[in-house]
Image (cartoon, rainbow, N blue to C red; front, side, top):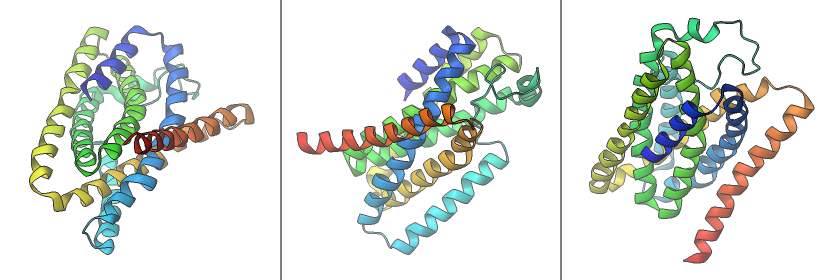
Length: 250
């Protein structure tokens, strides 16, 4: 997780905004396919195969979806994939107005998100190494555009490049804390793993449907839509290919 964050923040600091805009658009479509396929085709089935009542897991899924909605509602969970010049037709100064003093809120929200990502990856690996790998890849696909978007919003909010880079890089360490918490807690309480996997699936589904896909809808022409469909399908295919190859290599 630290390597993921460090790589994405470094890309944000090094590349031009026009290059970042194109990369973010591509990564958003790819991550939708990977996150939905990981949650609906792997994490949830694994959770339901464990010793937990299905009605309890469905209740956990419902609570998880509502919890992510409330977290986003109160700006605890914040995803930023836009910036000036990204083609979304915001007025000049939009991000500075939107971010304002919320640059710190982005850091706090991303820190919280990184901790939960670490816990979820631990739960996935404790369940099945294959599931752990594809969960990590799904998080990677989403983490890169999120890190890049947060970095740019912090710049527009008044952070210097050096300061935004330092704080963003420091924030990625929190994912390691989450991974350690998940490993030591879930390792001793195996009965909690199916519920954590269900919460992870709720998070993936919510982010894909409420945050990422609405951004894809802004590109309404056929010329813009076809690459999105191809990349969503590619994300699903990547998860299937990795799962298939890993199963056949063991």
